[in-house]
Amino acid sequence: MKIILASQSPRRKELLSSLGFDFEVVKIDCEEIVPESVSTAEAAAYLSELKASAFRDLEKGEVLLTADTVVAIDDEFLGKPEDEREAEMMLRKLSGRTHQVYTGITVKTAEQTITRTDVADVELDDISDDEIIYYIRRFRPFDKAGSYGIQEWLGMAKIRKINGSFYTIMGLPTHLVYKILKEIQPVSI
Image (cartoon, rainbow, N blue to C red; front, side, top):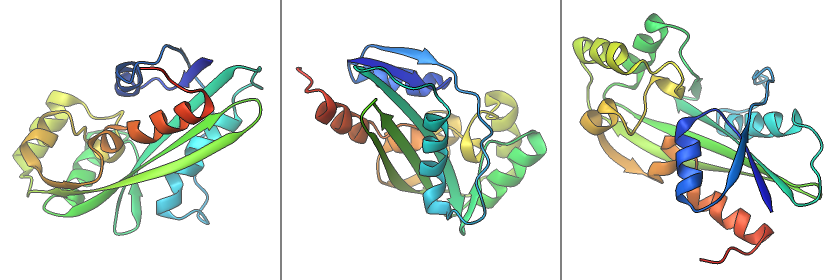
C-alpha cells in the first residue's frame, strides 16, 4: 500500500509519521469554498472530499489521505485568518467560551472513498487583548483554522477543558486514520 498525504501541514505529516506509516506528500490545488447549503458540522468533511476529488485517478495499491479542519462557534465557522486583524477578531470571539473543532478526513483508493468527521469541544479561558497580540505576533497562526494551534502557547496557557481528541484539534483524528487504514490493509505492529 502506497499512502499519499495531500497536505502541506507539518502537523499532519508529523502525526501520520508518528502512527508508523510511510507516505509521500503531495499538494492539491483546489478552491476551498463551502456552499451555504453545507452545515458547519459538515464543512470539514466537504472540504476534505473536495480535495480528494481534485486529485488524479489513483492506481491499484495507492491510498490518498486528505483532511480539513474547521473551528466553529455559534454555527459560524472560522477558517484560516487572512491577516492580524482577522486573527484578533477570531480569538476575541473564542475568548472565554466553548467552541467546536471539526476535522474531516477522506481516505480514497481506486475502489472506494471513505470520509469521516471527528469533533472536539474546546473551552478557553478569557484571553486579554495583550495576550492575543502577543500570540499572533509571536506564533503567526495564519495557517491555522480559528487562528490558533493547540500545541502552541495559546493552547498551553488558555485551554481550560477539552472534550474529544487532542489530535482532532491538532488537525488529524489519528484514531480514525489508523482504523480506516488498518481496515484497508491490515497493519502489523
